[in-house]
Length: 403
Image 1 (spheres, one colour):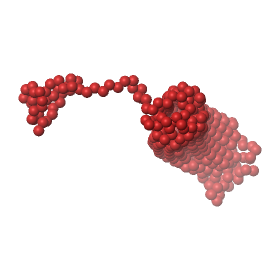
Image 2 (spheres, helix red, strand yellow):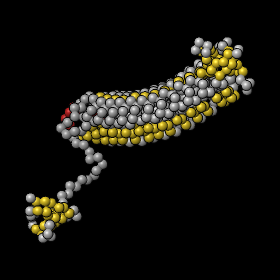
Image 3 (cartoon, one colour):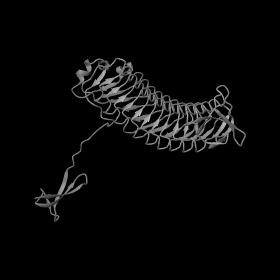
C-alpha cells in the first residue's frame, strides 16, 4: 500500500492520502505504485474526516496522479499550498487546470506530457515555474505568467507547439535551459528588462518565431538559444550583451543583416552558421574572438569590421563564398594588418574605408546671402551696427545683432 488512508468523497470517488506535518495534515497520493486508478472528474476536498479526526488537505503529493490517462478534470481546493513533483505527469486526458491562489510552490514535471491540456491558470502566489512543468503540453494555447514569477525553469514549456505568443513579465530575471524549445507555433516574444540570463536552447527550433525583442540587461546569449528559428528576420541585440554563444543563431535562415553591439567581446563557434539569408554583418572593435565556423554557410556580401587590431580567425569562420565574393570594409590605416592576419587575409576584396550605410550620394550645400537690410528696411552691402535682417537663397531669413 502506497497510502496511509483511503476516504470516499460524497460523489463516490475514493481518494488516497498520506499523513504529513506530524499527521496533522494530508497530502493526496496514489493507490499503489502499479495501480493508479483515478479517472474522470476528481474533486479534491479541502478537509477530510477519518476515524473522527479532522485534517486539512494541504498538498498534492509526489506523482499522485502519475499516468492517469483517463483523468479528465481536477478540482484543487484553496487549502492546497504545494503541488509536488510529477503530480499530473502523463495525464493525457486532462484538458484544463486552475491552480488556486493558495499554492506557493509547484514541483518539476507537474504537468509534463499532459498533451490535451489547452489552458492553465497560474496564480500570483507563485514565484517560480519549475523544470519541465508543461513539457510536452502540445495543445496548450495560452498561459498567463503572473508578475510574481521571477524564474522560468529548464524545459518549462518545451514542446508546447500550441503556444503562439507569451508575455514574460518584468519580474522574471532568468529563463532556463530549453524553456521554450520546440514551441513551433510561437510567433513573437519580448524578453523584459530584468532578465539577465537566457539558458542554452531556450528558444531552440522555434521555427515560427519571427520577432524577438531583447531588452537591456541580458549579458550573454547562450549556446543554441535561437537555433533553427528559421522565420526570424531581424533581431536587436542590446548593448548589455558581451558574449554570443556557440550556435546561438545557427540556422536562422531568414536573417538578412546583423549588427553586433560594441559591448560584445566574443562570438562563439558556429554562432550564425547557415544563416544563408544574411547579407551584411557589422563587427565592432570590442570583439576579441570569433569562433570556428561563426559565419559558415552564409552568403554574406558585406563584412564591415571596425576591429583596429585584427586577431587570427579560423579559415572556416566565414564560408568560402564569403571569402571569395564579399567585400571586407576595414578601418583606415589597417588594410596591411588585415592582409597579413590569419583568416582575414582570405578575403579577396578588402577596402580601407567603411561603406556609406546605403546613402548613395551626399551633397554638401552652403547657403548664399541674397540681400541684407537694416532694421529700418534700408538695403546694405555689409551688416551695420544694430539689428540687421539677412535673407538667404534657401529661403531662410535671419536677424543678427552687430555691436
